[in-house]
Image 1 (cartoon, chains in turn cyan, red, brown):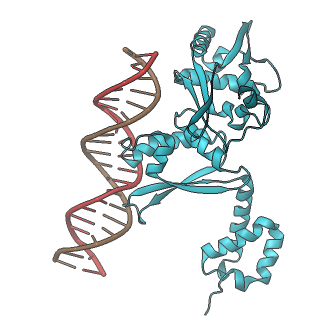
Image 2: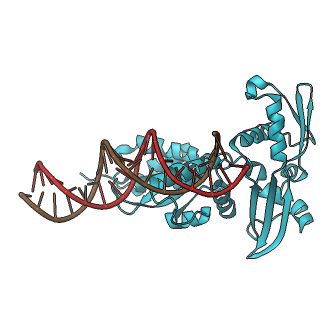
Image 3: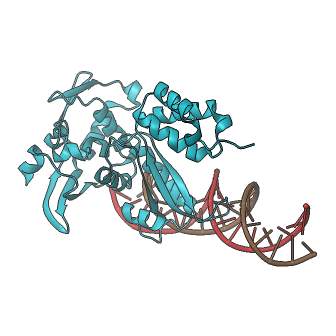
Length: 284
DNA sequence: ATCTGCGCATTCGACCTAGT
DNA sequence: ACTAGGTCGAATGCGCAGAT
């Protein structure tokens, strides 16, 4: 199985998996790891950066101390099929770190460098991004995203708060107030996910309209850049034809779906020729 | 039609606690 | 002792519904 993870196309849909680093990195260690990942050159066996303690706000002794403590921490991963654990593996972050004059030369462990090759386990679940996550819960939501979402399409899905907690592996009785949940869980998680899945935004689902009503769920939207362009054009056209529009949501939907497969100019011509059917014309 | 009380959301900051 | 995660109190504001 291990060689299978390294070499073949890993099918995310078929397997379940867990990844963890233990003990958890401290905030400072996380910052330093991000530094190493930023300078990490996927193409080369060794990466390097010039150490400037002014820029990093860190002495070389401190850096060494943190690397030492990070080296005692282990990344573990398990692959499951259903309930059955097929493989578990343990590896560390660095293969070697060299301090030489003002340079830091380093080689990340084989498994992290494998993320460069398309299709293998480490690449498919984007281990380099996961290592940058600040919130411990981000990984769980990320897993849900990569298992359910095609990167080509825009998508949305809804989770009620109870299910959402289940996904994140948070006991139901934690974070009873929504604001606490939002501030301590939701916002940090979304900040992390922005690193890997651009253009995510959320909508709060309420039991009724208005401010004084309970939030029951979260709706996730992730949009690809194509959608942003289509959305922009759609709004532009709606503005131009605003006098003819009776129901904006229907108009938006019609224009949007046409613009998805046609150019802005074509869409405009289409509206000019089919104004009646696209918008319900205001009757006098 | 306007007033009033209630429930919940939204805040901020302070406190508590378990693990290094 | 320090950190990060988790909890809580109190102030404030909004919308709804029932009372006036």
